Image 1 (cartoon, one colour):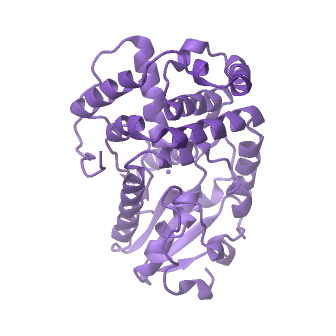
Image 2: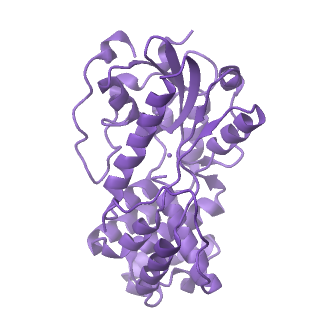
Length: 344
């Protein structure tokens, strides 16, 4: 199933009634799809860098000249300009502790007088037809307790992790390893108070309080849900193994990356774990969806630059800084991009 059918229509109907346990698992996998859901000196103003080398992990290669420690207090900002207008771009973590503390002084100064605040998509919007198809495909994924499909050593590790997360065996009622991996990633992040919505949720609230207009697209991600079943088993198992190892390791890497992000340490912030994102990248159609999201963010920033004054954009760090990512595309279009190290 391709991504050409993804809907951006404003009106949606609710997901049809399903058994409570099935609905909770469906919501978990749909939430996982969101994690795709949402980081120059003069020498960096040349042509865009070569095309990204790995279609299975589109954000794996970072444009190194964009990875610069911030000079000003707080998280790192990049600036995109056409000479008369400016968009201040805040690179955001894709995973962070809930209620993460950070210095908002620079953000609040830039929020004052901003024409618009551009946000990455956060909310699942599922069409009636899309939800029906997703629910049908999810039921096809079911087929007994997942841990019975594992070898004894892996089964022991998995049982230990799910027990620590407070989940019974039948919570993972699927024989699809990718679905199991996405569910495990959801449970691990929830149990450890990790979220994909910070700091975007706070930025949105502050912009609304300041009465600054918001620009935030929504997408029908149900086709990604339906495509889980078509992901090759070996790829799905690789995803599950990586998620299991991360759940065993614990949230320390994310906590350290969040601290680095809050202090403007871009390279440290990029060290965050990416199990969710790499798993989703394996799903058929995910690459096209990723391209569409980046293209839409680039277009929104370009549109904001047509209006005199300044605007703010919040973009997940890796999609922002990757080869073929948001800043790379904006440079290719002729806009001037400056790094956090050049701010005064």
